[in-house]
Length: 392
Image 1 (cartoon, one colour):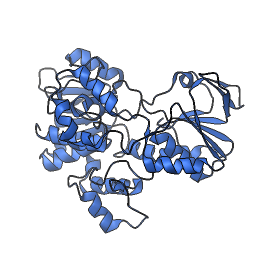
Image 2: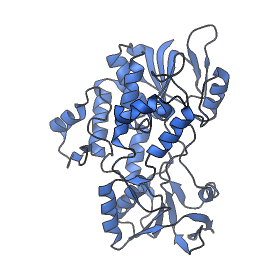
Image 3: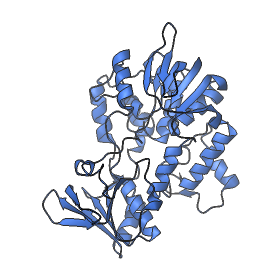
Image 4: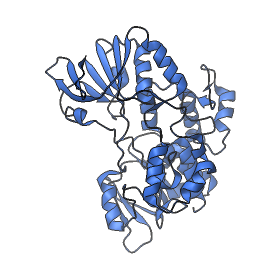
């Protein structure tokens, strides 16, 4: 039986595997990370490449390593490929961050902790302490389980787009695991739907790639914020009062209002606005109600207010992720079978160590009612590690 089984091998699961083995003394042979992808952070890297992200939104001290200054020192020793950091907050380039992740994983042999596969069930072990995590390849037994499940596999498809999803129409979601931006034709008209940082980054990337015509369609005016929530959420300034709130539904309301959904950082917004004054890129405001596709012809979208239409050769959705609890049906079954407590929004009610049930811990989106709006971010992974390590 394993001591720890971490379900999910992205930023959160990989960082926690490092913390538990290197800092908490969990023997390497007693910990495994269950993940469907062959390498640590595989989905993270695919998503950042597809968006064309040049620099992260988080700062230099937010990364996989234990030492907060590890990324800074790594850049000083090794980096010669362009500007390593951008202001404000000394944000690392995506290439630098990816190289540092590989360095940390290699130096601490984190790849050797991984099991390739998916969870499809969770139950108590019969007659033993701990849990059984079901996988298509058979059960895994662990005294403690950490759910490090992100939202990357539940991209949000607007209703009009969902109706076309199973058709051969050229409509894609930037966060679909099968999507590859490099395979998009540059000829013709590409319509990007979305109002946040991802949509802006994709528009910039396609412009740099030489796309013939690009329209960025957003439902609302630009929401310009440097981060996706106030910096005070990274520490006690906001979190102390939040964590003292006894009403979990009130916490959900705070998280929803504190998160700057659809926000674009100021510098990216200025660059996008400048480029939109030239040829090839147009920014429009409106909401699509319906899109018609006929054979191999163009897609024709009509607006909800009836004000005209837009015609495009392909549509790329940058509409973020669905808001419902990640994990899918197997986690829903486990909630009912184990009697796990949830707020009315469906997200876990956990204690100060992010423990949902004896021996069952959470991080990432599943921990946001305990950590707040930064729970999904890299800083959220580091904070979760501090809280879980205290109980490890």
